[in-house]
Length: 388
Image (cartoon, rainbow, N blue to C red; front, side, top):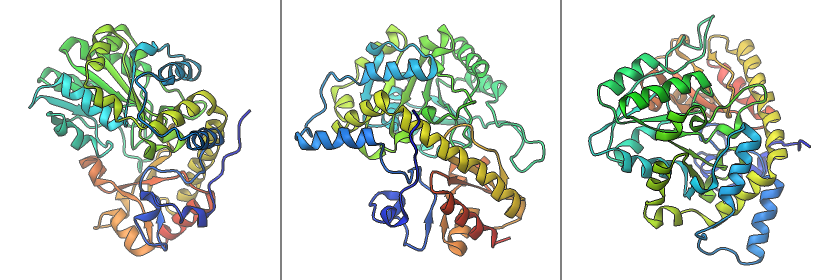
């Protein structure tokens, strides 16, 4: 049975000490970093309280139930058959990406990303020794009347692979546009990767937040080629608001990729948070009714945002995200000379994520976090609309 999920009261939110609610003064509506305004799921609160009551705050065990629990969730949610023996934990998705890339590229090798893209990708690749190769998404801008979805540019990807790139850091569903890539697109990527000897590392952290009626396709599930040369990195952190607890899973689907991850230094796995493991087990095993209620809240907000923009800011381009709770807004048709998030923060006291760090394609854009109360979302858009 679906649980009802609502945002926490504003006074409770302002008492939080995490980044979202401590970065700015109280007169700012924070809608930038990817944290949600909802309370923790009851099953997660219960699991964490029980751990505290028994003093269970030691080192993470070398064997936990999480690989099997995640595999069961993946089968129920996506029809993805995961071998628990190929699932390994680490502290977070970014760490998993870096540790895998370190082992599949040599210093100076090209690693492809597809802007506009999650800004830390530009830093994770050099941290792993690679060089960023940008292959922007293609499609009409969101402010155009007949805007199609932004999508992978398969021809440009092939050109980058042919030119010598050794890895592709895929984002599926894509942040910031909220689009799960289709099975056909992913199969085409896998075919190209196999042809040119490219390793694909798929960041799938937003996958549990795919809306009903939309389809998330795990990269490793699309073909034997994908399974042979690919890795997936996922976490309960986005869907259940657990980023501070530090737990992610690195998933493999072939003997060679499994052996590569299994051969990482033990510290890669021990950096996983004990509370993160316990909360993730609760989320994947018992948290789906709460997740479905959250998706109801997000669905209402993503639709309300479209209506608010149509009424009060019709020049701002917006594609309703199919997954996640991040809205990619195109302010370029307003003719502002200043970066939109900067002006909006200064003049309206609404904090959005600036678009330029997502790559050159992000200029004139901003990312808005809609995982909040409907009233807070309305207030933010009304404040921004005063700038027209």
